Length: 168
Image (cartoon, rainbow, N blue to C red; front, side, top):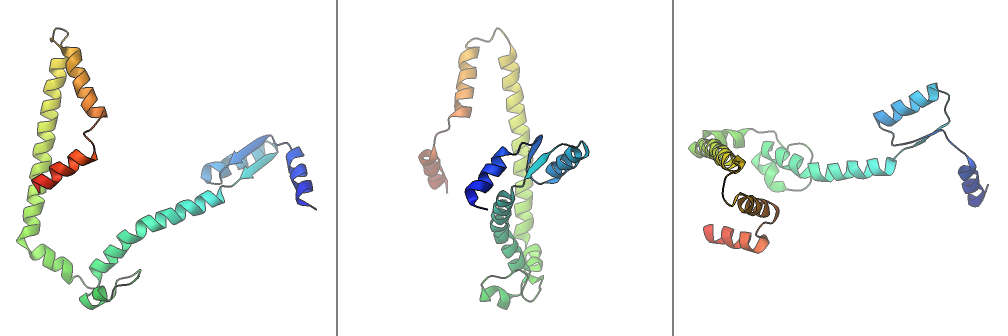
């Protein structure tokens, strides 16, 4: 049968239900429509699934590589290359990191900055919301407009770079 005849035959067929996607929901819908004696066409998005799986693999592999590298011994880590499992399993790197006082200082600083920053942010937001909630506040709409403007439009990449460069 020629391609044109096959296309014509497919176009003439009518279906009660067309299901796109072959995941659990698509298969359940196909099962349900089959129980109702409906003529069903299941279009499986295999190409999309393969693409997304490859994208997930490409995204996940660097993380997996670094994790495997952290569990490898020194010689295996210096060899480099592509590998899926640690070369010469070793926990010495983790022991050295946790033996150091600097890691605990960094954890402490991170926790202090996170807690203090969150509390200060909630306090400032609550005070601002309380003041802006009052109907009698002068220039209330202008203040709200300024707050919304800075939320929607940031300074951009170049000013951010300049601030980071001068503060580092």
